[in-house]
Length: 112
Length: 113
Image (cartoon, rainbow over the protein chains, first blue to last red):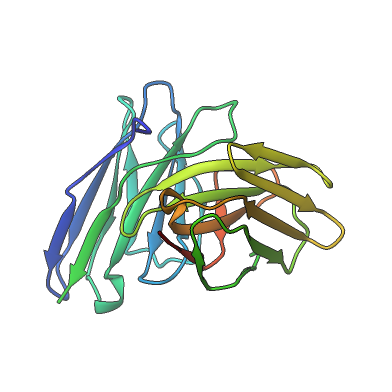
């Protein structure tokens, strides 16, 4: 158990729709990162939030956006869903002074 | 961005056998992280290596970092079915923390009883 939870576990959407994925981090974890993992691939870094501000972004278009809240929860929003957005979405949280990231179990998104 | 290549892509071993998984970076390694993942689940942290020549062990798993070769290896001794899963190496994109990682594509390990 890493203390990081994600919801929902599974989600099915159609192309063009919008989706919101949620993550709840451990208390005191000020940094949250989101990753996309396509089938058979390693996770790809989407973006990171530190104290409610975006603190780094990978090679993902602006239709991927996020929010981080003071209660250590965060959201990943994806607009105008495409078929290639089908993947496992992982969030990971870190304390300021630690190097280890604690990963949640992921949300499996299927876009039809 | 940093590119990590893992080998082999998949590995099937008999229970009790030793095995090694390799991770090679095309760029300077500032730190190397090993994770294990059960299919479709989150990542479980195994080990973090930060210095050239560093070697860490946990139970039957040993990881080494060769900074000059920009390479890390993960060795499992006397494998057990519980070791089965996907092993991922990750390296920090910015060279400062473990919070923005680039991952290899993983090594799928199957341990036959």
